[in-house]
Length: 94
Image 1 (cartoon, helix red, strand yellow):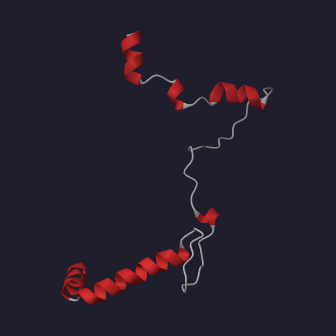
Image 2 (cartoon, rainbow, N blue to C red):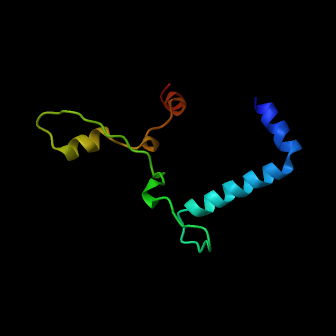
Image 3 (cartoon, rainbow, N blue to C red):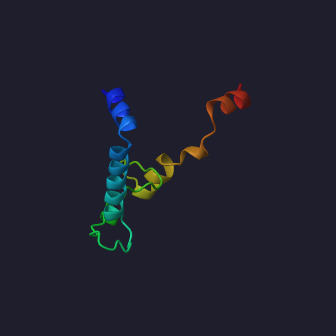
């Protein structure tokens, strides 16, 4: 099926160019930028639809009676770079 589609587009270059122009135009119309598109309508994607690619975070719920949330955070939630790798630990403490 894919091979037939590729073969069709190779044999019919006009159709391929028209499809390319359609997709480029569609991308320009929906781009989240303030472009002057001339005669094309401007319907940008909302900015908050772009995913947050910041630092990964995890929410962990735990109980420790008699301790404050800060005590638990200080004890349990250290970033991974604070821990040496297992190989380093074995070399240092073997």
